[in-house]
Length: 96
Image 1 (cartoon, rainbow, N blue to C red):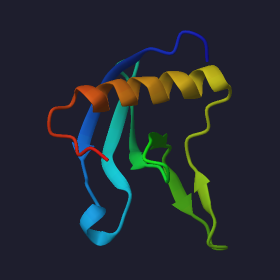
Image 2: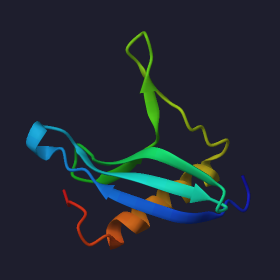
Image 3: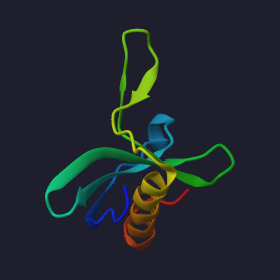
Image 4: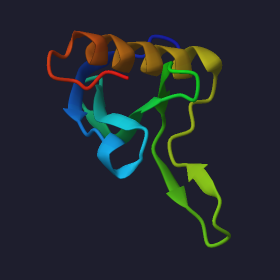
């Protein structure tokens, strides 16, 4: 999707460390001021890094499947970069 315009990113700290989880925050993006997408997760990786998990649901077979499917890597990268920039600048976001 060339020219993807992310007009808003909201970060919601959601630290699950006390329960043994790896989620640091949840995020919502708005595209073009017209479409909001919720359910992105900022997750601590196994080696201490941080990455963005796209919204997903658990199927009847127990497998998790993304519900937001960017059609190219540029769109996926644009979304990830916008969320990570907002997360890094959020003063109260938990850190790994």
